[in-house]
Length: 332
Image (tube, rainbow, N blue to C red):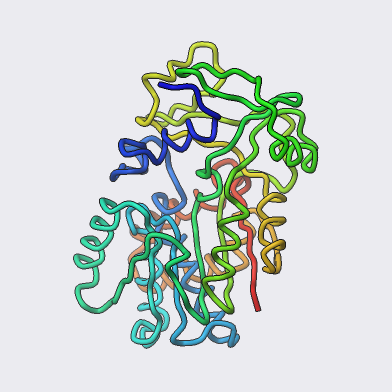
């Protein structure tokens, strides 16, 4: 493997022709990690309830676009649609559903899953990038997208390159150095591509709300968070026993998001920052408990308790509730 900057190495690991995300991967118990989507349908259900509130508020038109970015299986958007049908079925006839997905294999899987789930009742449109989408009014949703952007590694003034699978800090990169200074980092990850992503979204739609869930904090961590997930084992990237050549493109690689960087990227693109909340607080504020109460009235106690236990994993502080954050933006 030739020497390259770390962002190129990470991009190849995740998005190359044989990269980790280039083909379908199991998520959940049989995969490498859990997500909120794989944990409970009530994650998508709560977003559906929020979308309906946006329609009622008048922010999202009844014929607006509901767009998921980086849908992988398509389960999340399908859960959203299922709950919209339950809560406000007439909106399925007017809202437009879109997935932004760069990989053909995943597009085919998503189309097949939607056909099996909804038949002809739901019209799904695919685009490979936000730059292909042009709309007047939309709600954008993404789950764990910002931690999957390639990053550069920075350490005391130097940017990393990768020679084979060995990391060396010996590159002078003024852009990376300026970002590290801005976010008070003398070491850690500097994400690449947030600015372009925010600009593409701002150009794609005249009026929208964007909501995303990811792990991290508003301020940057003071150290490296880069890690590999392999069959639910978390392996620090700089662990002296790590076998990167064996994990490369076969496992997920990720890092904590610096939400201040995301916020700055969107504000620079002319999009207003609304809030950053713990996932626990966000889901409760958007009505997950009310949805569970509705379920309790309609099903037997055994099914209710099963779904309640799954939903608890979304909001319990020691699982996904506190470490994961929701960030929200609006372009008026």
